[in-house]
Amino acid sequence: MKILISDSLSTQGVDLLQKAGFTVVVKSKMPKEELYREIKDADGLIVRSGTKVTADLIAAAEKLKVVGRAGSGLDNVDTPAATRRGIVVMNTPGGNTVTTAEHTMSMICAMSRRIPQASASVKAGKWEKDKFMGVELYNKVLGIIGAGQIGSHLTKLAHGIGMSVIAFDPYLAPEQAERMGVRMVGLDELFRQADIISVHTPLTPETKGIVNTQAIATMKPGVMIVNCARGGIINEGDLCEALKTKRVAAAAFDVFEEEPVKADNPLLSLDNFICTPHIGAQTTEAQENVAVGIAEQIVDYFTRGVAKGAVNIPSVPPELLARLQPFLTLAEKLGALQTQLSQGAIERVTVEYSGEVATLSVAPLTIAVLKGLLSPIMEHPVNYVNAPTVAKERGIEVKEVKSSDAGDFTSLVRVRVEAGKVSHQVAGTLYHKKEARVVEINQFKVEMVPEGHLLFIHNMDRPGVIGMVGKVLGDNGINIVRMQCALEKRGGDALLIIGSDTDFPAGVLSQIKSSSNILSVKVANLS
Image 1 (tube, one colour):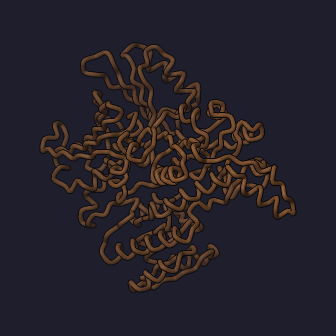
Image 2 (cartoon, helix red, strand yellow):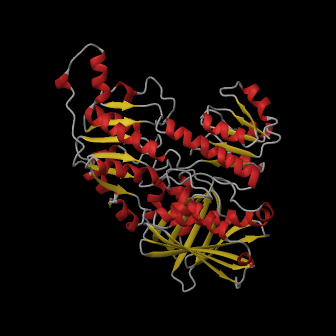
Image 3 (cartoon, one colour):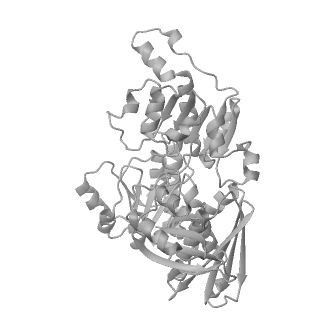
């Protein structure tokens, strides 16, 4: 079998593949025509961030069975296109956790002591000792937004040099935070108390621009900010203005909204801003870890049929996958919906399987629920392999229940989540044995297609609500693709569900919430 490696990879990974008996072709930075020729007869493809695995490239790969990313990000891989072709996509999550956390701490140290600026001054033939006054990190408060794997390791490093750590992560269980030695606070409180703020969340609609002019106005004067997570979490224009006025004393970026960063980016002209070219994972150890990791996963897949690290299929026998696949899709959608409808740290997840589905091997389905539940809130990809581990690390208790009675349905999957001392439940089934449907949201019986942008309006059952909502959406150019209204059995409340092909801006939600008949408004993205 031929394994094509189209980006630079540590020799340890190459050696491992060759020892396993594979024909390994290593060619990085190939012209497009050559890449398309080489992929034509490849059984496996290993990439880093340089190769763009597009739908066209996948279509040209006549024999391709697996794409392996030596690293955690999959922005350069068209996973849906690979899935449609039956190609497994796998990555190596966690391989660069330590390295990225260390880079973040290095940026904090360099920023606080103005090391890059002082070094440049000396190399320019100057000796400006009094110019580069720094600040100690000892006894300073580090505020971490997103206490996942990287944030957790950064906490250990910060404690080691005598910093105290506060964190905002609405999905982290209090018991886990206590074990980490972190004091959990609200986001506003973190902004007020932290001397240094570091972001470690994925880039989502909720986290985009989370640090902006309004947030900076609530921070300590002279706060320092670092971003080694994803470009766009911090509003670059707002930060630039705050750096100019010294409201923010210094900032350090490893990532930008647009990469490679343009030379005319105004941040680059500021003396109190330092940056690196997205090298958070660039260490010898991390590159060896991800190279060996992806090579071992490729060998396991081809020799044992085990898809470790797969992001688009679970590791199940091929003969069971076809029957499980529709339920896997349903389970993941239910988990994703729960995360976006619930509030507070998730403490327990109970997955109930009723009817025919209870006779199947449900372990992969529970993992799919966890994958859907955790993916929207984690900085690094959650897949079928690491989802149980991530849940355990975050102190989430997971329970499975089986029953032969599915009521009016042939099969029913119900997901109950306890978060913030409140229980929420959603349930779903398959129509025609393949089409996912949500049939229950808390006390409401519904019939919802779990896809696209969704708006959930819990309202009092009064005339005019649907008309008001429709007018607000229409006035803002939002097209309604689907809509249904469910009434509570005992009367009084209703749930209006609206599906659209675009997201729902905050201003639109505020207009809807302003009505006295509206009890709550929530959005979810199940694209």
